[in-house]
Image (cartoon, rainbow, N blue to C red):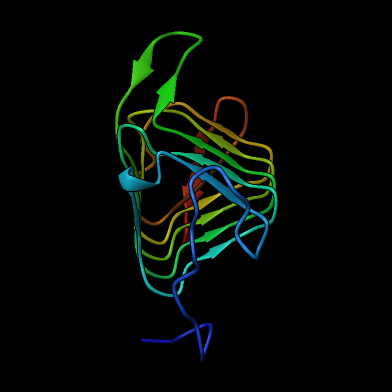
Length: 133
């Protein structure tokens, strides 16, 4: 296993307050944060119905991850699987899983599941190709 951060430590997360890396979590009891994750500044996570961020996930700055949407009353767990990457300024809505090793391009709106080992982007995000194609 390649470790991106040699001395990585779990960040201190306070309800609704910026971490030392300037990202915020609401409903922090619903967040499961894996090892060696990287969450960019000014990102927002609402974990009311569960957000699982597995090991070695990278989330760009200014991303929004919602387990609840008050606009359309959708709710459900969001899962970001091991080693996936979410481009900056992307939004992930409730009840979505982003697969292992997959890449979501910047400024994407993720409305439905993204399988393992693919590149997806757009509004809404669509699978463009496999990682190794």
